[in-house]
Amino acid sequence: MLIHVINPNTTAGMTDKIGACATRVAAPGTRIQVSQPESGPVSIESHFDEAISTVGVLEEVRQGEAHGADAYVIACFGDPGLLAARELTRAPVIGIAEAGFHLATLISTRFSVVTTLSRTAIIAEHLLAQYGFRDHCRRVRAIDLPVLELENPAGNAYEALLAECRRARDEDGIGAIVLGCGGMADLTQRLTEALGLPVVEGVSAAVKLAESLVSLGLGTSKHGDLAFPRPKPFVGRFADWGA
Ligand code: 5HY
Image 1 (tube, rainbow, N blue to C red):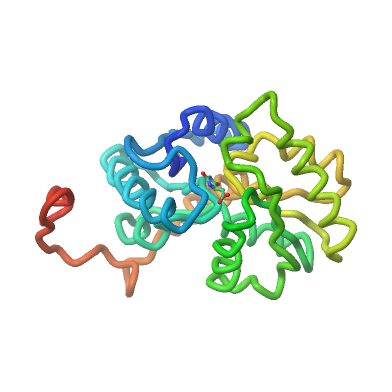
Image 2 (cartoon, rainbow, N blue to C red):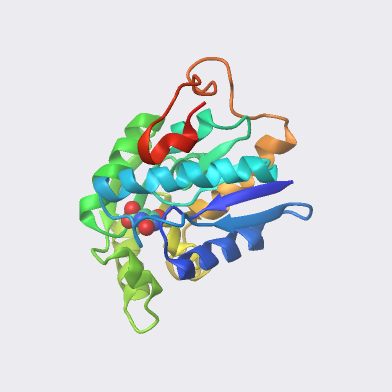
């Protein structure tokens, strides 16, 4: 099977990291194709960034349809464009936040999320409510470093993340931690060993959930609100989306 993993931001180093993580966990017989939009924010740290990045996500899904992708992963913790992307394909589309939440509830009764900037915590909180996991999550914490600090080898992002994860483990009454950024995809093993409790990372979780759905013959339902969009003309910069 072919899983198309989309990094919604436009930082190639993070795309490569996400692709390496997806490839590492993929089963034999699963091919991973990773991509990022040609246009959009270098990192997604606000409602505005998310809104802009959604167009790029949808353009990547359109290209995936042309290449015969069997499933898609949206590798940004805000799951930008998830439902709109599902309308464009019969394949499964999995967001890394929803994947992380789902797996965390299968191995613990309560979990906390640790993400980057405090201002984006509300995005994770909105998703927890939307997906029905609000009662399972004790707290959404943040290290208050910009997303691209995770790409700075000279920075202290890992140390800040480990310290916040320790506080979550010791204060929140949880059994697991969900990492709240696609850029944390390479830190799972180190953090798990350092913390002594399960650390769920969304890219890995989403790839395995996508494999499971494809192997069960389950894809996005076209009955109801996730049916293909009604054909209509689009004008201006989106004219090529029209029918
Ligand atoms: C992400 N931003 O996973 C989110 C993380 C965040 O560029 N990739 C980004 O902080 O919401």
